[in-house]
Every structure is written in structure tokens, then in C-alpha cells.
Image 1: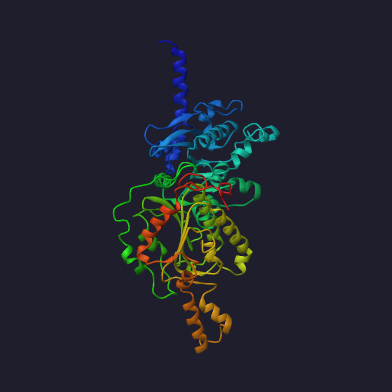
Image 2: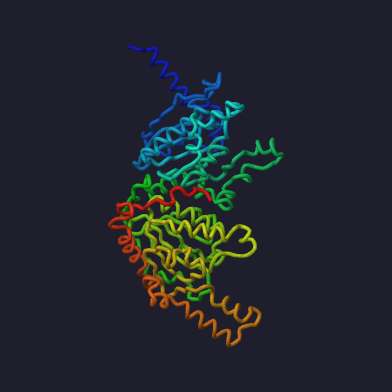
Length: 520
């Protein structure tokens, strides 16, 4: 056979690469209930679509070449539901997938190429931080940015151009955490952890003893920091969530999301939508039940459902078109929005504005959560950041006032004067500076009971909150029958998307929020 020795060398080296860190470490991974990096790639991508680059890369430290197959980062290109993506998977069986100069260069090149070609980027994380001793010393530290004088800032900063998705699939410290904080969508699998430094480093450096879960588990990042967008029950569920998310999104900011066929049964519940809204104005309810009536059947895909829970941010479809919904959730704190909720909405506005997703706002909010704790959390500054972001949104905005909409929160929910394409109310809507009962208590004093004069004032103030006053002065566009809400939104979206936008293309925004930080 011609070139037999060369081909045998290729086959031998390829076999060694596919063996990753060896069978014992692969077994250890499986014993933890986790897939290997190569198994993850095969399970997420369409069959036989992976196109690997850098498989023979290895550490540049003396004596480490044979110990670092693919240098612990498996990278390349593939397809998800027929869509071309870039993919990088940390191989924990090789040096705990710590990052070296060569591995960093490979990751960066793949992402840079994917960005240039408009491909979504997928990062499957399970890794320690920077590899030691590679990064030690002056030469180790200064060479770690990938060479050149701009490469590190390119890796560690981002203006959104194409989608970036990160999955936290094991213990992730250092690089996977940085990647998660640069991503548009982050999924964390239950039983995993993410942080800047791991428990071992913290114990050695600070004497702090803490578990992975306590440091950066799903509860920490799902409920407290809001760094992640969804929690997955296991790795297979994680892959499903990534596929679902991609179905709502374009690959890059210069295209519109895909339009889907409308599922049978969509809109069938509109006739009884008011049955989910209590007649008594002080009763709570689940806004998700109302949204579920309006959107295409089974299309709600919540973002950050466990964080800032008094406001809902969810991708969905209406009439086959992707929309982003911001809706107050009265069953949590009566719908009052706290600083977590503000951060959540700003993040969502940035996502939708960048990727040409129209926004629909559903009001039922008594105001922002205020008080000493809120002030210490900079509520005023965050409210203004929220308004600043809202003012830069260039995708269509539609507002529906379901029930209460009071004070500054009315405008933050895209009320009048906020560039909202169409702003309508249900006849059940109330709009005012504060709740009429609070206003009466300010006038008469909260401790003076309910005198006849006070009761009269409350009734008068409640009557004044009627949406027909705003409709009469043409400060809202219409008061609509709730059962027509779905049809109204479909028609409003059709009108507001075109025929052309500021970019000269139907349905494409100006992406003013593309350079807003991906985390708050």
C-alpha cells in the first residue's frame, strides 16, 4: 500500500484522540451519571454532522503532548435541526478540561469563525480553570491571551452578532463561567456547579469550606444571581432545552426568526379567557394561564422562570411568529417588580432587540417594590437603566393593560409615550399614579378607618382609573374585548413589522442593545 506507514500513523493518532483521557476516566464520568464530551456532541447534533477541527492539538508544555489529546477541548461545526452551529465541548477526562494556551486558541478561532459566518455558538461546559503550571510566571500569564495584543479582549468581551449558548454540565470554574456570562442563553444541569474559583482553591487560598452546590449550584444561579436561564433535570433534558431555544431564535441578528405553522387548537381558549381573571380587583391569579390562551398552543418557553418571579419573561409564538412576552405575575408579590425582576426584564429586552423579536407587554402591576432594602439594592438606578434600555428597543412593542398599571411601572411596561406601536387596554384595566386605596390613605390617614367621606373618595378614584379616560384622550389606542386579544396582537404584529424597518429590511431592528452587557 502506498504511504502505508504515514496512514498507519494517522490511524494510530486518531484512535488515541478518540480514547480521550482513557477508559478509567471515561468510566468515572459515566459513574457520575454524565456523558463524555464526545458523547454530548453526538447526542446534541444531528447524526453524522460533526465536523471536527484541531483534533490533534495538544499542550505546548514539554512532555505533555501524549497526555493531552485534543488538548481537553473538542471543537468544530455541526448541525442542530439542520442549522449550522459551532460547538465546543470540554473533555473532563483530559486534565479536568483545564484551559491551556493551545486549547484557548482553538476555542477562540472556532468562535471567531462562527461569528464571521453568522452561526450560533454552543459551549458545553465541564472544566476547571486555567491549567497550572502553564499559566504560572510572567511568560505563562502574558501569553495566555492567545497571542497578539487584542486577542484576550476579543475572547472576554462580546457585542452580540450571533447566538451564544452555554450548558453547565459538571463542575465549571474559570473559563466555562466566563463563557456563561457572555452567553445569550445558559442551561445548568441539576447537580452541577459554576463559579469563578472552585471549593478546593477557596479552601487553600481563603480557608473557606464550601460545597460545589452551595457555591454555585442551580439554586444559587437560578434563584439568586439569575446568571442561568433554565435548569435541566439531566443532560438529555439539557439538549432538549437547547433545541427548543434555537427554534425561537434566528442564527444571527441580521435575520428574522423562523415562522412556524400554527398548531391545531391555538386560540381555542380565547372565549373563556376572562375566567382566569378574578372579578375582585385585590385577588391574585396566574398570568401564565391568560398567556397560554393567547399564544400558539404549547409555545411558552420561559426565560429565568426561577428569578425575579413577579415578572414573566418568555419566548413564545403568536400566529406562527416568535414574540417575546414581558408580563407581570400577580400571584407573586401581587405583581410588584423588585430589582431582580428589573434585571431580568432588561436582559430580555436586550435579547429580543438584538435578534429581531417583537415584544408584547401584559400589565398587571401595582408598582415597583420599594423600601429600605430596595433602596440599598439601587432600585431607582435600576428603574432608570430599565427605561434607558426600553428607549433603545427598535423591534415592535405592543402593550396590553390587563388590570392594574400604576406609577412609574406603567411606563416601564411600555406605557404611553414609550414608543409603543400599539397600546390597548381591557375594560378591566386600571391606570393611576398609585392604587386608589393608598391614595385615600395618604389623604385621610391610614389609621382613620373607612369613613363615608373616605369611601366616597376611594370609589371616585377607582372610577377615574377606567381605561376609557385614556382612550378618550387618545393616550392609548383602544379598549378591546379580552377575547379578541390574540387576533389583535396578530394583526398589530403584521402592521408593525413592515413593510420596512429602520434597517430597510422587514422585521429587522437596529440592534441598539447588542452591546449592552449580557449579564447585569
